[in-house]
Image 1 (tube, helix red, strand yellow):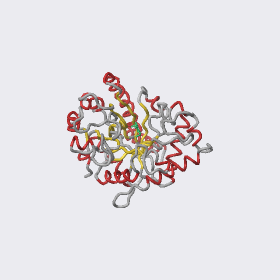
Image 2 (cartoon, helix red, strand yellow):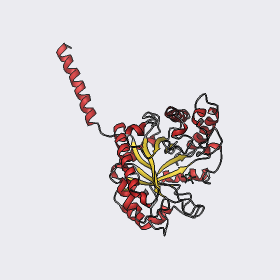
Image 3 (cartoon, protein in one colour):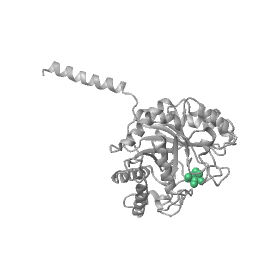
Image 4 (cartoon, helix red, strand yellow):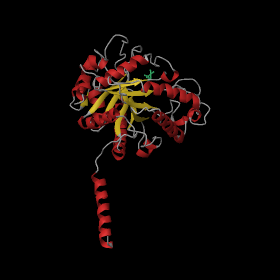
Length: 371
Ligand code: BMA
């Protein structure tokens, strides 16, 4: 090739790369190259469904609700006639080898629920209020700022943490569909880490150690063949810039889904809550587009829902203009009368919740059925 045609080819190649970069569209990808086919399919369904609307999720929806535990069906189903599209599950205490979660739900029941959701076309996400491996206290034990350091390689609780991870990996590998394939799970450990109320929180460990904890954990699962996971990072709310959001972000190489948790505290807090959601979602959806991640509002709600039009006058206007995969409201405790975040029959916001459900772009279980 002579010099002129060589130069021409180089220009063509760079021209092509430049154009293809500019025109490349938002196409979220999975960090784990060994993710199972079912996990890839679930991820792709999330990407496609985001174009249609925002899925509604509820924590522990199937296993208990307001004033019922063993007998009853989903408060959300009772009120709307349909189930949520996304089901949150909590596995705190599993790592201790216990048969019941910290919220007194048996892991066998959780497994059955997860299997039912997968068979019914819904999405499963697991949160983990992991006990404190250094002190033996619970997730909220912030008496030491050495916990994360102590469980990383060379720390004196490293082996203890590995045992906890083994219990967790065994559970994740026990989730099978009717064909024997692993059920894909959105796993969201070490959440709200930019607050300081859990042992993995901001004042309790350095950013480097927090990020190292994530890497160790994901690598451990990868080595165990736990390839049915989409990893979700959700900070606390309150960040106002993308740099701030990324300060403790574990990295694009291991994270698939990004979001944050935000709650409304009282009726007067409405404007602040809506503003905080909007600031957070501006940042998270922009970062998601830049880095090909799926954005979510990982946890939210207004305890006891004292505002009868909260769903259509607060939550929906705050999120409706964002392209996010889902919004999840927290649990309806069976044993604490005021600790609920979804309505039950007769609750003050029940009819407004039905209006929210009937919005064209809110997606419940019947709306997300695979083709
Ligand atoms: C918290 C509360 C607790 C619960 C924990 C883990 O926000 O709901 O009662 O034990 O989540 O589910």
